[in-house]
Image (cartoon, rainbow, N blue to C red; front, side):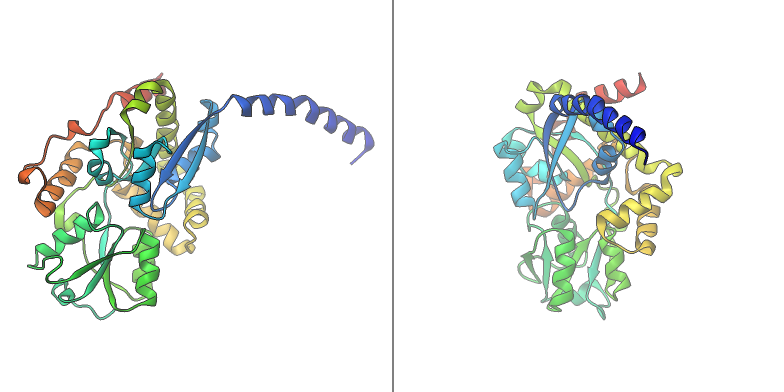
Length: 325
């Protein structure tokens, strides 16, 4: 590089750097917690500048399990949580409201090699994130359909998020089965574990991932929340745009540490109905969430409440309206 070019470059840096630093100072930080990993829509939105364009910086922490995630959002140490939405139902009494969807369940009941049927799980130990929420309820329902009851016909053991559960099943063969989602379920089947069925076949559409916040925080920060949701929606759109296929597969490989073959199959599932366009909240799929809790846990006297007890569409609708503009 010539001396003149180096000098010009230094001038550019000194001219641009203050503006960049000022922009950084102007960003409002939102603290987000999630399980089982970083939501790909957030990763994409950050990489594409969708948050920064709206004056937002995201501080994202992945929680080890649903218990710590719930604690963070109810105690106010986090602003937004992304996880299976049954977690929001479980803590709704703490003033929690759902504000966005994300994906519908493509979970499978994955068991140790040699397991022939769900009936083979009688007397075994099955592992879950937490025994009273989300995918554990899916597991209980699938076993109930085959006459097996938790606590008497099999035992549940809390073991944390999806990747942790697969690692536990690899290292300890006494852990007979668990509910796993892509790409972990794909890795498991590649390693010789077997699928005993999918939640789609067993219980129908199920609203899985979504975002939820504390109602007081949402009211006090409504404009900020609308901007955040707008960036998240843009991130989801970017992921599902066929023009970005190669980039999204590379992102899956990097973010979820899976080989290209697994990332490609994960992408096929994402674009084939797993990830919801615009991260829309599916009311009917959420009815399944509520019905499952009523059927399996006996809550509300077995009569699930209406979805609008938990979901407030106002913030999402405002974000979508701004995007259309």
